[in-house]
Image (cartoon, rainbow over the protein chains, first blue to last red):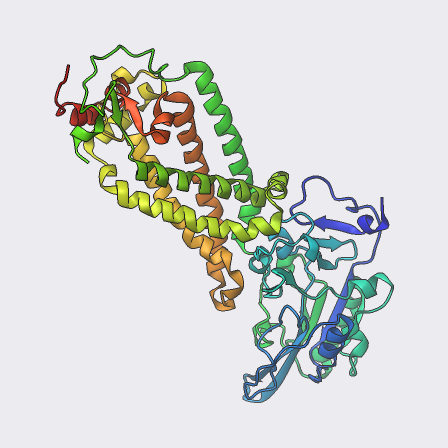
Length: 301
Length: 219
């Protein structure tokens, strides 16, 4: 048993048990993003590209700070900018570093039909194993955050790994390392939640952001990336952060009740047809079993 | 093709012409491939089916293309047979007597034409759910081109595809059971094209009358 396998607690489309499930005690790791101190410098984007050796692609200029509308297969970390008008008419420039949220209950992993193509480590990181990916794109459908991206050349899907390679060696992810304002933090989920709540309370009590709060959506079991928002009641304003994300019910139904109903129906159907044959047999033993007719013939060949 | 040309020597009747048989097997073999690769993607227990067919990547790549072949077959079957598949009052009578059919008491069945009500159900089932599989399959084929704002299409497609597939699997099992095991002579008819006059009179008396009733008697 390799240590590698012991560190895995969830495997996509896997028949049988998971070797690491409940085997080792490990901290749930967590990235904390304080949107109130982000200055949109994009150092995290560059660090992500550098550490993961991703090729650079063309950006799109749309007269704003936004260099591209959403993350790409080779661009896993993107700051989303939004010029937001508040209720009292003042302008707020909202910036949110967008990447995989590393859900505790990941929709991508749930939707994936290929054994081992998506795994969740015991520290909570959700990672794609591209060598097992069949390129079906079901993870794209399962994700409520629009994160997995398809590479048409390799026909496989890619996304942020939370620098699982660095974290495994006791280092923080590359984006955290590069942040100049300290708006990015990395540690255990408990520590980060405490830090985030403390910061949100500070914003409410001392900075007049009465709706400040922490974004850690329960619909996906909580996430391995949490945000501090000035206005937690309106996460949509932060580049379309969903208010109550959940895995699409059709994906859940497909992988749950429909699969079991289908299995029972298919196996039951086969058994039913076999029993019918045992009980009633064929309709006839053609041709011997028929009363012979006087043949009526057409033209002779 | 006139009824006269359908009556063959030695007490045989032509049931399926060459192009009908080819269409059936184009659809049949493409459906088999889709079934096996689809089951491999459907269940972790059956992923070895994908491995046996060249691996998950190959199966994922070919499944939609073979799906196009299957849909072409289904659409051409519609062109060939839709007019003969209209549900009539005698089909409803046949359907109400299904219990006798299941117990192989075929002499108690109301007379069927070229196709009985069960065969018509199979035809329309494969037509309707085949088209649903096609439409949902298009979405599943290229999910990365569905914009985020239209993501409900992907959510719908994922469940429509599996639901329709399961329904066609039920129809497929019945079809193979009836054609290969239960009704002797049916399998040969879709390979070689002909059935015996006894077969026609027993299972499709309306069709038998239509074809043989008008044929000249020789002998």
